[in-house]
Image 1 (spheres, rainbow, N blue to C red):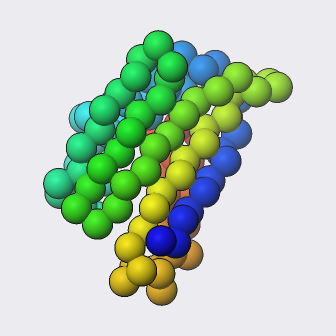
Image 2: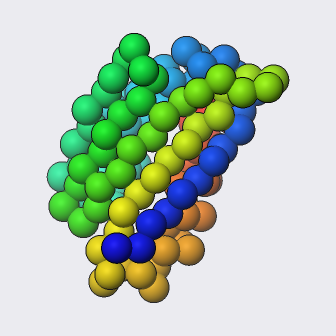
Image 3: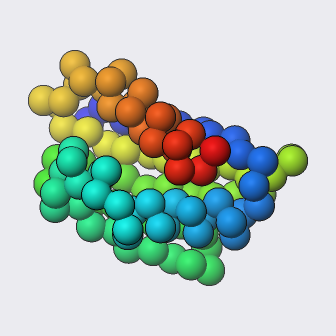
Length: 101
């Protein structure tokens, strides 16, 4: 399976960044435009989440970094979506910039 890996630095603290990401996945429908069946299993103590959709699976984790925090996202795509890998990665980065800063 093709993989998408994104490391996104932010100047916000771990708790604040995780809270913003959790709100994004729970309260907006942006990600559901791509897969309406996406499910999120949050682990608040580890600041992470496992994602599972009908076409993909993945996870994200927010960790401490110099000057703030870092979001690490890993997505496994089916081979059928390989040609869209770059577009999906760009869309994810735009969503992160919009919702986390």
